[in-house]
Length: 170
Image (cartoon, rainbow, N blue to C red; front, top):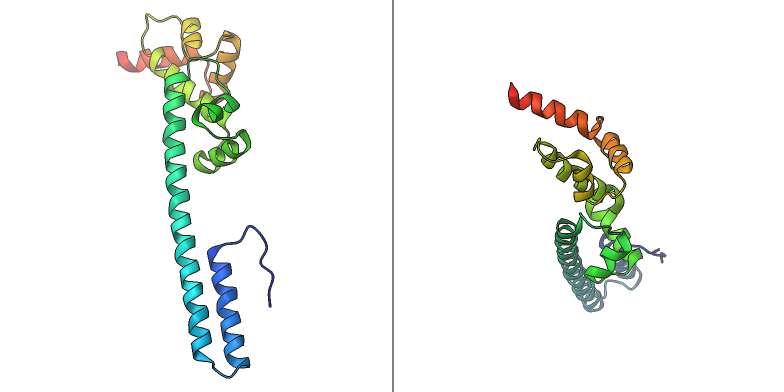
């Protein structure tokens, strides 16, 4: 009757099955027992798909927690997407796809934002050297740290610190 192309949704499958039932009902003169058997199978399939969706949702939730914990524990080191994927037991392509789906951005962008967030906390402490902060949040090249920080915050780390200190004084 109809082709269903991958990837397909539960709604598409159910819609096609319901249409098939309607046509079959019209065509074969209302053979109710056969239709009920097919409807029961369609309902069973729908339940299985819902259970699978719940399981996938749980897996994504677990993956999200594992990723966040891994980054929290390792952001100060040189870490990559492939290393993170391996550490939590996923293939790199699957991890990349799921990460973007869950976090709405690439791993690299997320890590940079996390590191800059941690750097901002440290910059509020006037006794910590800016170069040292870059190294503490995982940037061995201080110029690169400054460039990333400025791209995300609109100010370089020293300017950010000065603004924060002025806010605290007033």
